[in-house]
Amino acid sequence: MPPDVFFAGPGLDRADALRGEPAKLEALARSPEARQMVWADGLPALDAEGHLVWEEARDPALFLGLDGERPCFSPIGAGSGDLRAQFGALGYLSAAEAPVFAAAVSLASWHRRHGFCANCGQPSAIVRGGWSRQCGACGAEHYPRVDPVVIMLAQKDDRVLLGRQPRFPPGRYSALAGFVEVGESLEAAVARELFEEAGVRASDVRYVASQPWPFPSSLMIACLSSTADEEIVIDTTELEDARWFSRAEVEAALAGAPNAAFIAPPPFAIAHSLLVHWLAA
Image 1 (cartoon, rainbow, N blue to C red):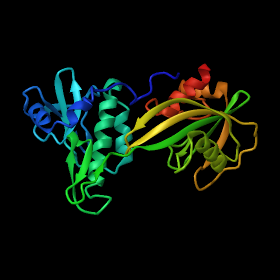
Image 2 (image 1 turned 180 degrees about the horizontal axis):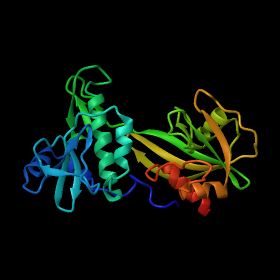
Image 3 (image 1 turned 90 degrees about the horizontal axis):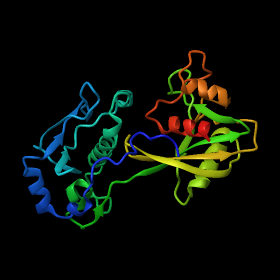
Image 4 (image 1 turned 60 degrees about the vertical axis):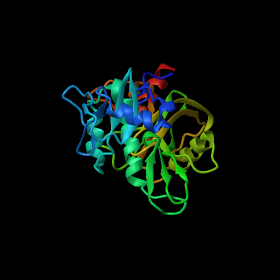
């Protein structure tokens, strides 16, 4: 398995059994031990050391879980569309608290975007401590969605295929990725994305690890694949470039060498963990 994947730690005790007990949740929110996550500029606030900031529970809209005996809540927050600011915050977020950050961001984002029933169009209300919404008109209950995304390395001999999107910082290359479509297995999604984006045919697809990605709420599913194809045919609507990189080039990029052939994805991205895993394997 790869090294610890950012966002993928245990986080809080989610205490699922308490979600269906409104009276108990209300009592927890009133407890002097209860604390609430502080938000700033559309994201959970961080202190100078990268730790989450907490205060007395005043607007406990979302029950995040228990930290030992201490109940932890979050307001829904205002949200932010500035991805650069969001990713910048990850550079100093404490790895131990990253799972709590991810849960709060994904859950709050879902509530901001799903105020109405998808079944009848009437307003819905928060229930189960924020882990679902229920329509007062038709009774339908809706749960936060998770969008599965495959992210993969294709390997041939002792080289690996990486690509770059136009929005990447100059010089950065990363693993190819794409959403899993309806009626599709993970293996089929890996094969389809590799062929669509780079024109190579996948074989021997192997699962490696997964990572929750809270922008807004994806599950990154990291895989390795082999291919016999050498030629790359780039889909320019998806990629700006794609290349084969040697083991030595990947090692230099992960080490941050000034003469590296490319800039590696940041440590908080599962693509970074996937490259580390490929080298070790």
